[in-house]
Length: 112
Image (cartoon, rainbow, N blue to C red; front, top):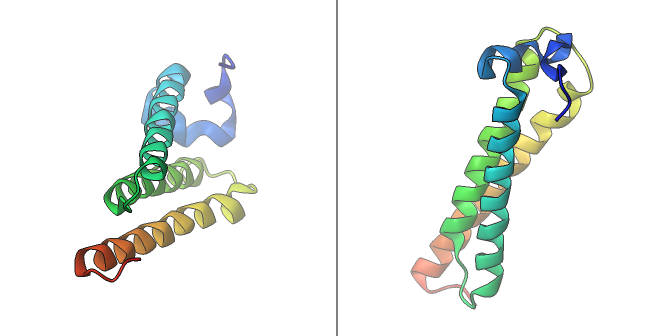
């Protein structure tokens, strides 16, 4: 990790959340990323659709992206995060909706 990363003004919100522990944030993101990749592997390996795994992983992704938005927003520094990261969070909301729709089709016998 980059030592002193949270000392920059743009990271002030993250510093408040993670009490100046870049390593804690880094390991949390690694663990959640590996869990999401594992869920996608299981989803791709199963013959039948597993929308619950997709819903949970998209929900975690949504919390991560909006958490990043919150961290930057509380720093008071306006940057490109304002145009990019909220869209990633909205994209995860769309993924949750699509997975829920697939779950409804699977439950009602309309999935092919």
